[in-house]
Image 1 (cartoon, rainbow, N blue to C red):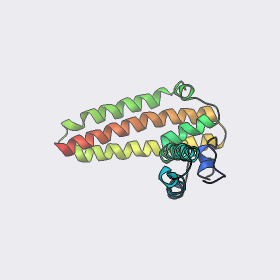
Image 2 (spheres, rainbow, N blue to C red):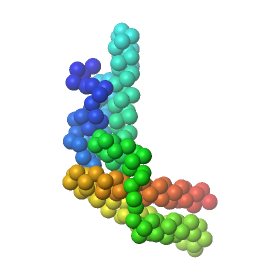
Image 3 (cartoon, rainbow, N blue to C red):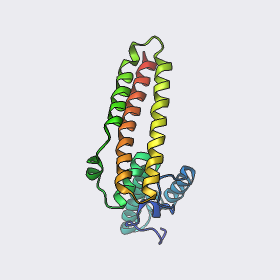
Length: 180
């Protein structure tokens, strides 16, 4: 097992990546495969019990870190956690009324998709709009986090949560349309 690894390293250190919102996902995936190859419990099956247990702990830590870093929303929440903001503190961030009104309008559009003559085209247009809004909030998060404006970053993160949920709902509607 690699002596440089530590169960107390943050996820970015574990993958030897710079701490930040925008990451090289190909590098993350390559490093994940490398670490899993080195640390997978099956590679240590013939070792002592202590080595087996440690390999299992390292492997679980690598899996958890990878799942967190590969998804933008969980990565943003993790970055805020690194600077001491809990998920509860992030969730309590004030959100401007204009954003909430836009979310209600998007949700209404999403709920009415099934009644349209061309629901697939309308849904794709709505998904594109949500993805554009999400990309904008991700850029805002990155900018605020980089400037160490963590409350602003947390507000952008909350907006990302709203948009992510809306996007998942749109994907479910798309799956339902395909099934019909």
